[in-house]
Amino acid sequence: MTDEETLTYIRHTLHDRAICVLIPTYNNVGTIGAVVRAAMGYCDDVFVVDDGSDDGTSEVLTAIGGIHLISYGRNRGKGYALKRGFEAALKDGFTYAITMDGDGQHSADDIPLFLKANQEWPGSLILGSRKKENIVRSRGSSFANNFSNFWFAVETWHLLPDTQTGYRLYPLKKLYGLHLLTSRYEAELELLALAAWHGVGIHSIPIDVYYPPKEERVSHFRPVLDFTRISILNTVLCALAGVYGLPLLIWRKGGTILRTVGALVFFLFFMMLIISPSVWIYVKIGKMTEKKKWKLHLLIYHAARAVTKGIGIPGATFTCNIDPSVDFNKPSVIVCNHQSHLDLISLLSLTPKVIFLTNDWVWHNPFYGFLIRHAEYYPASQGIENLMPQFRSLVERGYSIAIFPEGTRSTDCKIGRFHRGAFYVAEELGLDIIPVYLYGTGRVLRKKTYHLAKGPIYVEVDKAMTQAELAAKGTVKDITKYFHSLYVRRFEEISNKIEQDV
Image (cartoon, rainbow, N blue to C red):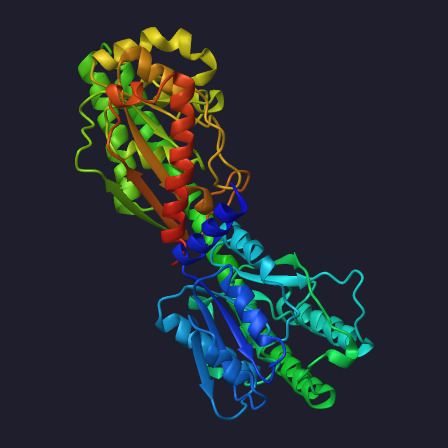
């Protein structure tokens, strides 16, 4: 993309993810205009809180059009200004706010870094950790930051490199204790501690920082008074850590363990004592006719729906949106992005008339491999060409073929490289392609993790693309590239919408 295209993408994505910029300011007449305009270069939604300035800052802000300006006559402190800004942003429907200081020390060029971090860790509080190389800071400033970092670790069991940074991205719907927020400089530490206690993800990213020469700096930090206030707050937070923060941590960790253990026990009970024995008896008694095979698929389908629609996945909310034109009775190739072990059960709940390509370990799984093999699922390791006769037979019997074009689960939930197999099968068998988009399974159960997290699972089934439409895209290679681009774009659109509420 060109620089202009990149900037347009950033502006649109910030808006689509309901992210605004919030700048509290007090007597920054020399810098505030440039700070606000620089932020407006990246974000269309900029809130500025004038905290009772009396040096001409108010006049500068009034002259800038296109901002959300909040002002009042008396200086109330940074904590109060943030509170007013957060409330205004929430009222206007924003989910996240990137806060910048009005003195020019933060670079608007780092706003894309916060957007990227928000996409990677939706719902988290992102801290801009100031790069300290080649920057001269006073001993008092360095000591205050180290002091704050130490006590924050004591109070919350989180070790962070820069707890005093004002360049942050806040998840506005997770601002615990906002109505109790202290009014001055120490409010940012209070918000950070409450977020940590309530299990809000906290991540740090490196940012640039500019400190002007000492004689040009405008600082409202009052060393004795503000340091005293911070010390008092830390004393209170240390006391609350034991009676409030620790119980919340135990409750949260306990809930995660219970969800995971409960799901595992249910799975083992369901598969080992009910499904697997029932299938074994069903298969062994009598001849395996086409009617019996169909009933086996119906069993799998209803079991999957019982989990996704009835019993549920612990901690997860399941939503499905199917285009009205989709007809699962017509054989097709179903393609889907791949994030988690939960993907299969999500897709199985859509229709009984489908078979899957699986990994070898799934096909040989001791718990449900017997079921997988007799349901005529096939390991991808056998090769598409070798499996074509089986695919033709299945299609003639009315089944669709589901393939994950990525071939493996994504570790970061992003769309990986697509392989051509699914699109080759569609071309060879003359089948339509039904795109299915999965969101959330990889966050509820991430690859290489063994615990269940809370979160939404969303399945979207788009309208089928016919062979005529596919042929217009070009070769199988062209079709593969087209679908990869389609999935990258649509998955981002789905993520932007859902992650406003995670």
